[in-house]
Image 1 (cartoon, rainbow, N blue to C red):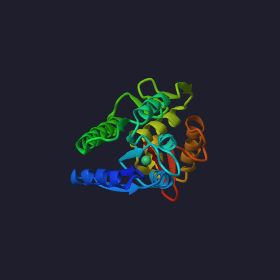
Image 2 (cartoon, rainbow, N blue to C red):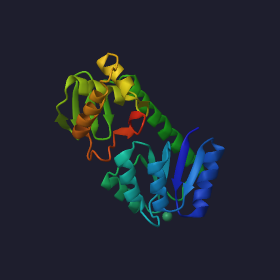
Image 3 (cartoon, protein in one colour):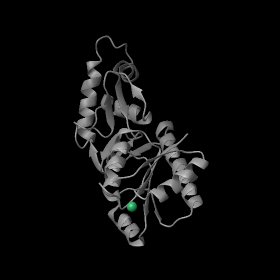
Image 4 (cartoon, rainbow, N blue to C red):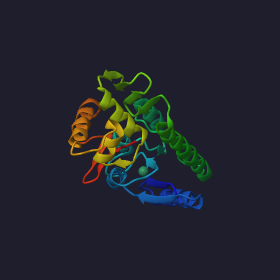
Length: 229
Ligand code: CA
């Protein structure tokens, strides 16, 4: 069941959205201010966000920006003012859709369904083999074996490329260092798994904005690594 987070301070609107989405088969959570909403978005797992623009705490613009730094999860922004919608577009914050209040609940449900379906296709295409994978600012060209970060090409060694490509093609799955070593080096990992750590470090230096808080390759302590989409 898809899990949706509504970030909305007007209780009546949040309840209306929640009711309609639950009737339509979604699992829905509500955060009633910006601070709580952002914290939950960054620390829990959701399939879609419905984000009000004017919120106490942190406003919807900032929340959208911060979620987009970490995730490709669909965001539908909601505002009472048409002007705000124009502003959202102009800022290019990376939200997927905009809806003005008042809106019909059935329209909201239809848009939620469309965005969830689109996002699922995106993840599937990352898994099953488009030749070019694009994840936020990162572009991996599998045919030419080239990697671009914000349209700037980064040099990759063969194994670095294989490792990045493998992780990106299996998004949101955790792999142990042993598993990665077997996959990429095609040998039994007899104490050589430090090689994986070294390669991950080098890849991060090329693709991450800050290596202390990686947005693509996440370390799962005691387990291994996961590529986040
Ligand atoms: Ca509001």
